[in-house]
Image 1 (cartoon, rainbow, N blue to C red):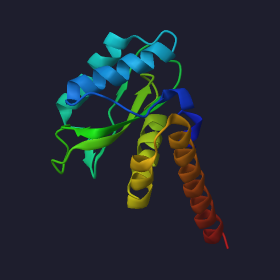
Image 2 (image 1 turned 90 degrees about the horizontal axis):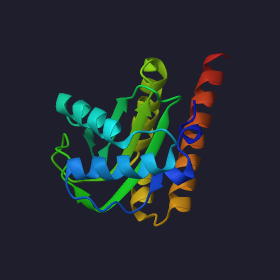
Image 3 (image 1 turned 45 degrees about the horizontal axis):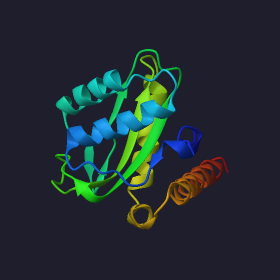
Length: 166
């Protein structure tokens, strides 16, 4: 399963303006709802805020992965946003968040939803990858960086699997 299959170029937001968590989630929900037919911005924001009440999706190192399940969504949607100034997201390391992967999943997609979360988490462990995302300036460049890193990780995983079989 490749992240690039769910993250379309038009779902990338290279210059988020919000400075606080709720504003940021609203900004991303508004942008995504304007691009995905039938996606209800208010309901999406409500789901994301409810998830944040369980604990911040700010995982540290300037990264957050807000996510939620939404009735009526046909398939998983992944969006990416970047904030130059950073957002106080009540992250685990109490540092501002600059990189956001937002995941919207259908209510019945637990396994796929968790695989996407795991895939994003794996990619973001790499400090060099995070730096590339921070330095990138536009939607196309960000999409290319993410797709290439996703492909690299997939190839590494396939290499590990084939070496186990011998």
